[in-house]
Length: 109
Picture 1 (cartoon, helix red, strand yellow):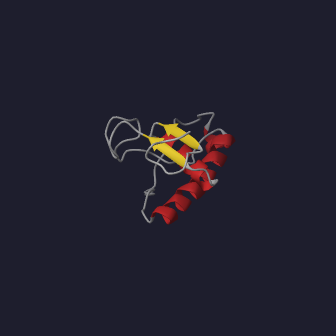
Picture 2 (cartoon, one colour; picture 1 turned 180 degrees about the horizontal axis):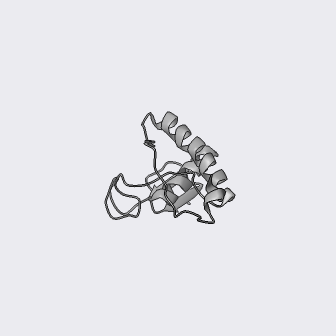
Picture 3 (cartoon, one colour; picture 1 turned 90 degrees about the horizontal axis):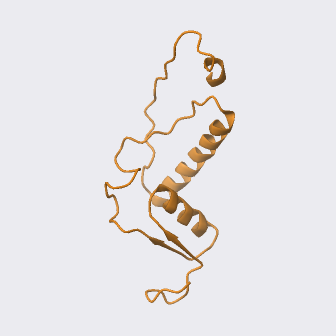
């Protein structure tokens, strides 16, 4: 790939700067790739599924695969914070409720 804005060609072009596109571009850059990330809106816009401060990070899942993914995600959140110099993930606690006798309760404890 080549861009008139760059002196050198890019290895990868990622279209879409939402959570998935940005994560993909960051992972590629971590692997030494020259990446161009394209987004049609300005940074911090309110048109995507990940805007605002109401997003959630949790490890309470009945599926152990999700718990493992979220534990790995926490490591990556902290790495991104160190590299950016910004606090990106604010842990504040949560309360999960269920009905007495819920069959999934033993799976999440």
